[in-house]
Figure 1 (cartoon, rainbow, N blue to C red):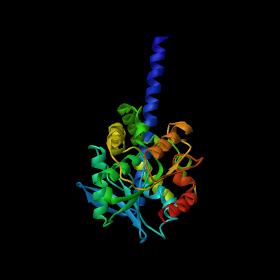
Figure 2 (cartoon, one colour):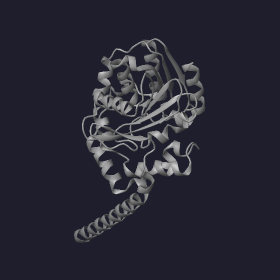
Figure 3 (spheres, one colour):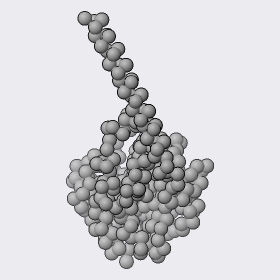
Figure 4 (cartoon, rainbow, N blue to C red):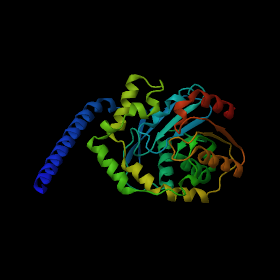
Length: 314
């Protein structure tokens, strides 16, 4: 009986290994085909700290809007398109793809806020994008935007939060490096092609804002690097970054905070919205706008957000 069970286990192990090899080979074949879509970046790649960061610039309006993506967004430039395409006629629109995102190189070193902010500012300088800036952070990049305003107040004239995270969101956060590395290994083997559907999970791919080629590029970027080293390092250091922001003193700039129903944040609706309400009570010049849509708020109601942004920036 035991001998038969061992034989079965050996057979199943060999079968699993064979399947994984097939999955990996198909993944490599697909990556090779998708390379054609990524031969040139959307935007310009500039040198920062010995590597290349990608910056997208469009429009020539009187104010410069800088979009900062949240954690894990494979293509910030294409993900934000549904919103900035409605603003580009009236403003200068900029999307900075941090290391580990979009067309930018990966990064395995520190991802503390001062390093991230320094690299973002260098990328803007290299792309000849001068301030002051109106920052539009999504999710985790809310920490970067707030730290930016505290560290270089003359560079930030306003913050428009696209369901941005605040420091207290990470009070109980626990990093799990083993989990991240396991997921990264699974993705690199090609399992993400079978276990995750970008078309269903990424709303920007189905909301009609991207053409067929852009959707293909977005998915190619996702499959090439669904979980970069930089993203893992950000997750490991976000708690200490949040603590740093708690110590910051923010200038008296205007804020417009768009807040979602919490879906996709890991928080209940009330808990998520209460954090922004608390921020509004503690600071002057804060406008709050709550919507019953998920966390990637800019891809669900871009028209409404663009209308509110124009009113706010008048």
